[in-house]
Length: 330
Image (tube, rainbow, N blue to C red; front, side, top):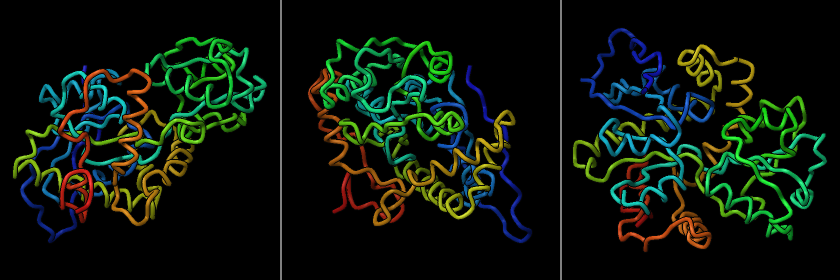
């Protein structure tokens, strides 16, 4: 069942500032509202989307695998998903899907262990038990990481614990996990002083953790206009959160009253650097060279089967200040 996130009405504008006509724009989230979405929810709550003429509604998907399927089915104008998920979907025939911007411009997935496990480095995993989320490309991450550190993968026991990564560590069901986010579960576990090793430092090619995905056929003149306005307002929302993190925290707490303020504040602050990692590039920039390297890694690990599509998987042309072409400037 799809869940419409609370707080869909835009904040009233100051008197004297008439809003433009509001066009509906539905965004399928990747998961429940969390720190990764702070800029979008701040843009919603402060009326930035309304000023852009967009009545934005955020929808929580029934599960993490659904956003791209629901986008293809016409249930949303835009989906928040993951770079590997988009590449897998395109490999399975969804070549009409294209990334139009990066929401989180760095990997968040990490290898994590509690001090009691005795795991401080990848080499310490030999003879240990690692819990994963059961996602094929994350299993490939582990293989790549172990081989890069000179550890025989056959000496490491793995178990799928789904999304129960933190309970599996705390209960000592496993010695370490691969799949938890350093900015979410890592912050949650901070009092326990976990060892956190980030993917891009361990031999896995860097990638954009969260991306905005659209259908190419929806990007006609009207669709492109809506998308540009959405991304421009979203970029402004992220700048607002950078200047005032409380704006993102307050908006998230309004959308999901079950969130803990102190924890959410810490998670938003931890996530901020991933929103603006490249000061010389526009917000949301996706580096084509990095995408090509990551796609090659997926092919090397037999995660992608079909020949590369002629249509590129990403375009930066809808980002603020862009529009010169597909996937790269000029």
